[in-house]
Length: 427
Ligand SMILES: *Cc1c(COP(=O)(O)O)cnc(C)c1O
Image (cartoon, rainbow, N blue to C red; front, side, top):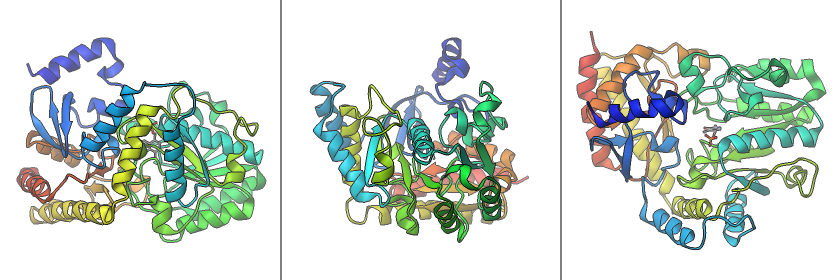
């Protein structure tokens, strides 16, 4: 028996489903998850010492590749000075200043420890600042696992086909309106129905939790206008896209400025860091200045902040995102070409260092269209690639991630493997 299987069996005895986050369990693709014992650059090694080219990248954070020496050194230095103080530090001010300087919408920012905390806090803040109750979210967008946001949320839940989670009382989500991504008319209708009781619209401005889905032309602009017109706040959940789609997130790419922005993943460089920030007048509603309570024992943790700062320093180097986008494009065009040559129906898309591959004939624009892909074909592709040492995300509803260490040779090895796998998929 493989060591991965042994560990999975053992894990299942003490951890529900054997994992600490559902999609890791391979439920959607079947088979045994790989237990990772080491990672370096574009590679991870599993418990059986098999090496994989990694396109999961810790679900986004590993943008510099795994175990980047500068990030590791920053963590080691910080750890030697103590792991946590529960008091302010200069490094967290530096991280806050970096986020203010680079993310257009952020004038003030508060650090937390995860994306879930960031979005949960941003929603509370939006409600507290506007004195309104209702929120609008979009089907297929995932904003962490806070109660009011677990309504037809993406990734793990989609994979299991559950529209929502047990344990969330209906009363808790009665103020959450779920609309179709890219359906501006539905947003207009919601605003005319609930006029001045909508606190905020929260959106992944490029969705990355129902595979990769771009906003349609005019959609984000429309949201911005409607929110401004009705006194609601626009929240961009850039937990995934921040410092991943581009140097200033999607707001930098589109020029559309939300009122609040949530971040995590890349800003922690692999350590637990999240953040929510935005207009200073809104942020000043947070305690101790204002009446919206929010706190965290490990918020701004010095070791985590050190990893984030070291990471953000690297991505600021000239040409970083151009190179990352280019490698990601090489990957997806190469995959699409090889699929076509093998007679497989597949399309692909990428933005910055994130990508989507879809086993359908057109790039999807909504959750319904993503769901309409050939999931069985994806699953066979996934396992074929895994057998050849390439680790894609274990679900057709997840985006993929490329790091700065995915060089031409790594991409070529991936494409060669894909060519062989596509040949086995037909028929
Ligand atoms: C990952 C993710 C979250 C949740 O972040 P965690 O750190 O896993 O809690 C929220 N929103 C988006 C867009 C994400 O991709």
